[in-house]
Image (cartoon, rainbow, N blue to C red; front, side, top):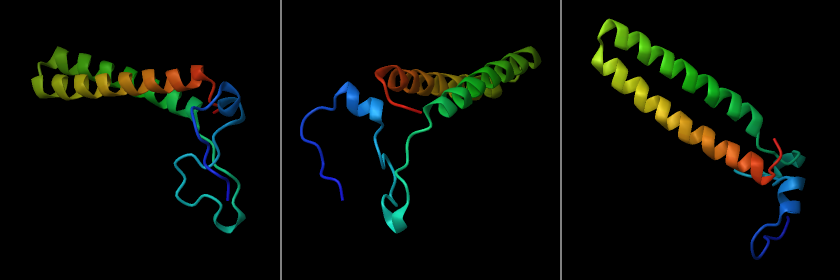
Length: 95
């Protein structure tokens, strides 16, 4: 089992990847370390933002207030998630 690092991570640590990051089954049965799929999350969050905005516009045209509010809140949450994932990707994490 790998020792935990002391101190802040370096850019090289992120370039190599962070093995077993958020993986509760890390090392079980000789499984390879899991790496984060940041690019997939960027694509999915982008699609979710676009669909939420499009749905909110459709609800606005039809005058459905609860739909506008619900999809607007969802679009904001997905935009925040998208920003965080892009930040992690630019920081140097692979994926």
